[in-house]
Image 1 (cartoon, rainbow, N blue to C red):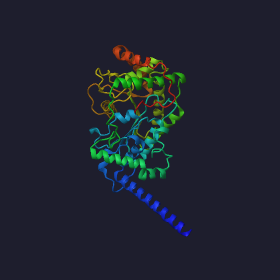
Image 2 (spheres, rainbow, N blue to C red):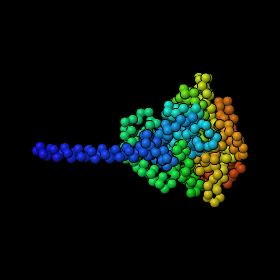
Image 3 (cartoon, rainbow, N blue to C red):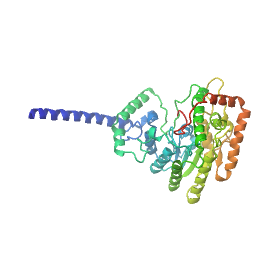
Image 4 (cartoon, rainbow, N blue to C red):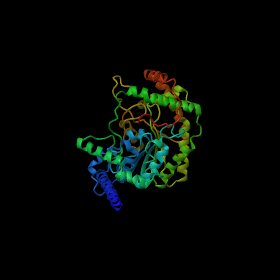
Length: 415
């Protein structure tokens, strides 16, 4: 009996030793490559930075990027910001910038991500995108995006996360992919500054808008018709208040951005008979909260709102005749880097000439009526000055006559 016990003990120790060795290999490999930016060590090889594929682990990867450098400028929000705002523009020289926006991001994620960044980097300017409709929307997708398992979640289990980051199989798999990327010279979607720059060209822009953007707008509009929101979502409003409060507490310049949508997306709300197709109520809540925050903190940098969501000619770009790419737009809800650079130029006061010199509207509580009228008038111009594009949009909407109202988040489709 004693011999059997002794053999069992040796077998158990052998298994434990083997498991410990495997874990040690995983830790060594993961810390050498640091594929998601959250397992750094003195021996980490930073030449892997360009090849780290964080796309499937955006929240975790961007939390690591947030702590990787002394960033001065940060971008936050959904995929609209994730794709459009480039932190590597030469205009940022001397102001290290980072893009911490995430796909399907809404206020319940944006607020804690901003707080995390402010706590771990000397952010002086925060440019925060709030998708039109998010403030009134009833839900968020944050429970299914990877946010809860990331360091951005203030309630995440730190020990569990650390074990996954340093010795987890998924981290090991991402390390292997990073190694393959570098060996083949293949750059992944994201840059080391968190910008989703690559591998996103749609094969057919018109088909994508018809398949994704138009039915998404219809679902949201039909939900809004059914619920007729008038005072905002208190839960979402709480997160906007947190954003304003955190920026003030860190003496950070806060720029709230309402990102644009293409006319064939925004026009659906007018076509469908949305109770507030110009989203006046959303803008009214935003401007009121910003005004109250600025009045309560006169010694901190004043928050401001830049609104790009309208029927400006850049947002009414015609569909390509040959099915090729658009100049300003990837699809119906995501502006390209080219248009994002115009937005940043307006926000930062950089010299700007050409078609975007009159792009954007600095919104405040005193010009809501003017803004509403300009959007409604813009829709009428879109309808009359680009009748072919408007008819194409209307025909696309008719193809989805039976689409059901949205009951979930209002994040832009696909991305």
